[in-house]
Amino acid sequence: MHVSRRAFQEWVSDALDDVPPALAQAMNNVVVLVRDRNDEDPTILGLYEGVALTERDTSTYFGTLPDRIFIYREPLMEMCDTEEQLRHEIRVTVLHEIGHHFGIDDHRLHDLGWA
Image (tube, rainbow, N blue to C red; front, side, top):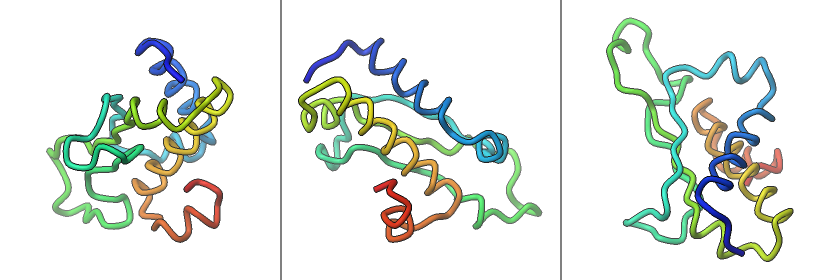
C-alpha cells in the first residue's frame, strides 16, 4: 500500500484528533513527526523519545526541548494492503506512542489495544 506523504500526514493528524480531549489537554511539551523510516531499526512503526510525564520532576524539568513522537511511514505502508488498514495502523501507532508519553508501558498498551 502506498500513499502520498501528504495523505499520510493528514491521517496522522486525524489520529491525533481522535485522542480523547482530556488526554490531548494533558499532553505537554511533545511534538509528533512523520519520518520515512528509523535508521537504527527500519522495521519499527513508531518511537517515543523523551521524558514521560510520570517521570518529570517539576523542579528540574524546564527549558527542555520537546519530547518527540516519530511515526514511520514506510513500515506502516509495507504492512498494510488497504487504506482502511493503514489508517487503523496509523491510529494504533499514534495512540501507542502517546501512551509512552504518559508513562504507560508496552504490556499495558497491549491490554488497551494500542500495541
